[in-house]
Every structure is written in structure tokens, then in C-alpha cells.
Length: 374
Image (cartoon, rainbow, N blue to C red):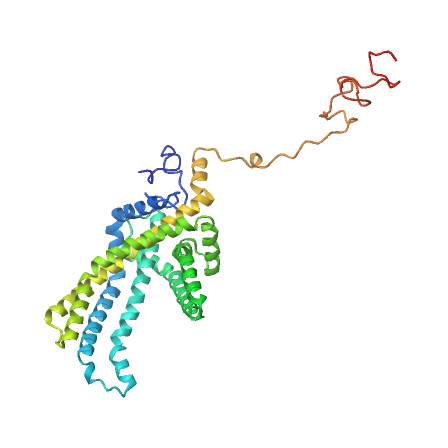
């Protein structure tokens, strides 16, 4: 694997690295789609204990609360579906109150906070890892760094929520509204993924971060989209595996509702198991976040070549300032200045003038060709 090597193939030592990329696995490497995905899972295989402990301590309590709220909500919905025949049809708010309970809003709240914290914690760990702190990152140390990344992650998410509401309004426009909104969000997929990374790792503002991302993906939108899409597909597949118990609960719930039988204890057990396994789905969000971080490093390195510059400096080949400035063009010097040499030949060395007539001999003063009698 070449990811551990410096730009010069490992011959320059550890000094040939960018000052903000001191981890064992370099983020600033030009990689293709397969390279980004491979190094993402390699990073996880080498840091899962340290990063996993931080996620467990920081995100774990929120994920547990989300699971408990989900169990309570599903129990309430099972009871609601079993007792739909007792709801007053003349009361429009009766059914509304049956579904939109405090447990429902708790699920929304914790379901919003958990992915937010996973993103902030993962990017905080990336910042510490790039600073060379791997192996000494305790949960407390990681939480202190997470507090600095939580602000950019939160404001970016809120901006996207506002943009989503606006796109819903646009989608209501007849004919092209829905198609335009869909195309717009497809275009935003790599920009949104990279925006979190740029804002947390580089400290850019929202508008500045958008300009930075757009400049990096210019001419590279399709590979960037492909990388984010593949990472999303991997997360989707893993989430589907964890959602098997919940799917079984939904199937059993549907059968019981159609038959009029109340949900049994087996259904409730599967429901609890599904809620617990659902907490592990939050951990899979680390994959697209890390893939976006490595993708950003690849795009930045492709545009700026910081590793190459660091390698040149490491072997003492830093160009001198006078060597990097182009010399001005030569100019003719005055003929009467004896102290300066002129680029023009002296009169003694100058060839005979052939200005009169054609090239190759010309004409003499009488207008005849030389060597021919007049």
C-alpha cells in the first residue's frame, strides 16, 4: 500500500509531509474512487478502538435515548392501530393526537442529534489524527475538540434544512418544479458532503466554504459524486442488515392489524431488538464522513500539491527567491558606453551591408548586378 509512503516513495522520511497532515495515513493524497474507499476502511480498521470509544461515550447516550423513544413510539402506534375503530371520526384532532405524541417528537429530536454528533465527533477525530495525536486521543480530549467542530456542523445542517424547505416550495411549481429540485439536489450531493469537511478542517465560513468546494470539484464533479454515492450505498446496505428485525416487526404488525388480533409478546421483543440494533446504524455514518474527508484531501492535493512542496523542502531543494523570479529581457546598451558591453556586434565584425538590392549580393551603385558587365 502506497498510502503510508511520502510523496517521494518513502525516501525522504517523515519530514516530507504537510504540517497539517502528520498521521500515519495521509489525507492529502491524490486518490481515485477505489483508493478513497479502500483507505476509508483501512483508517477504520486502524482507529476503530480509539474512535469507537469516543463515539460510544459521546454519541452513545443520545443513541440510547433515541432507541428508547423509538420503542415507546412503536408501542403507542401498535395500540393506536389496534384501537382505530374507537376513534371519533367527527373529531379531526383525535387521530392527530394519537400519532403525534411526545414520543414522536422525541424520536425526531434524538434522530436529528445523533447523526449530527457522529459527524462532529468523526471530523474532530480527523483533526486530531492529522495533528499527529493518534494513540493519545481519549474521550475527554475528543469531546473538547468536538465542541469546536459542532458549531460548523450544526450551522451547515440548519442551512441545508432551510434549503430543503425552499426546494419543497420550488417542487410545488407545476411541470418542471419537481424535476428542477431533484436535479439541484443531485448536483449538491458532493458539495454538501465536502462542505462539512471544509468548514471543520479549514475553519471556513458557510459562503467561503461553498466557494472553496466548488473550486475544488470544478472539472471533478462526476468522480466526487461517484465517491460519495458509493459510500452512501455501503451505508445503505449495512443499515438494511440492521433493519431486518424492524422489518419483521412491521410485517407482523400489518398481519395483526388485518386480523384484528393485538400484538403479541414476540412482536414487542423484535421491536425492542430492532430499536437497539438501530443505534448501531448511527455508527455507520462514520463511513461517508471519512470518505468525504479523504476525498477532500485528494482534491486539495490535486489542486495545491502541498505534499510535493513539502518533499522538495525536505531534501533542501527549496527554490531561492532570485531563482523563482524571471529575469527581465535583455536590452540593447548604448554604443558610446565603454563600461558596458553591447549585445550588438562591433563594426569590425559586422558583415558587409547588403541593404541595397536582393539577398545574395544585391546590386552595385550603378544598378548592375556584380560580376556582370554593365
